[in-house]
Image (cartoon, rainbow, N blue to C red):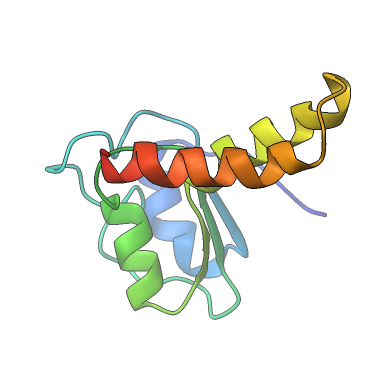
Length: 110
């Protein structure tokens, strides 16, 4: 895989060529934050991985969905981390389902 790290200005111009965009910054926690790559297009095969989890859908994920990109958001990431701990902690496999249900409740504010 060819990969490189670029600064913000360069990233915005390259987003339309990237097959994977990763946001590992807090950009998106605020509802006023825009998509991390700006308002430009994405590559047709783009996957957007946004580590941010918030009480709202981030602008990065919302715009990526509108553009038809595959998306992985912060809640997906959080769930993946939790599920990975199940066997390490010797927990019953039922814990996976309970973790999923718990995250749905937390995400909805219940």
